[in-house]
Length: 319
Image (tube, helix red, strand yellow):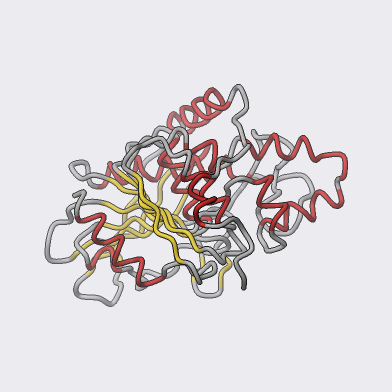
């Protein structure tokens, strides 16, 4: 790995060229309103996770168009939680197993770990949630499913699931503040949850994916952005159409609507989520209480366990 992107000083001043379509807000308002109207009952079933310090429930809730979405709900066994952290998963991963409870519950927080529909094929984190909506021919992976229109694009469903997950967190713990968190794709989904009308107290976003699609597809060969490139290699006449669809889901545009405190992280040797694309969204973030930690010699692993301690301190100061 090398420092292939802008310098840190340039990154802090960087502004993306991405702009929202004129109907951006109307599109998302109607999408979220329709799925909230279609929601059914939330189901919770206690499970044995093998731990004595963490209790876990298997949750099924209604996401986009009322589709069933799975999640684990972990919480401290001995003390009442002081907040809820809703976590979204990186690309290809799922919610994993009940015994894969994270340190959020050990720190005293309830933790809603949300499946990503149609993924969950990661080796160490299987999922349980189908995506019942089909699409036209697409590049293998998730990035081009339904990409010919924002109405059919895969991430319309995923981002709506995320907003509904925050709604469900408030159902499960009505008196607690809810924070959203995620790494990579999970960070992009958390950005959407913070931006699209969910009742969010703050966000913890690490090396986020799904940001500045035009730049990302131009300066890195790494997957998953390369899925879009391969699609456009085959569909030479769909470039404008493709990037118009992606503009509805771009973290740069969503960040301008994310009026909540945030702690971001970025890695300056990250070839999967290039640092300028992370800063493109972060610099647009709507709330004044925002901070970004940079890790100069790391790739997509970002700050890892060291950054988790930064997050724990940040969250403790806000609960």
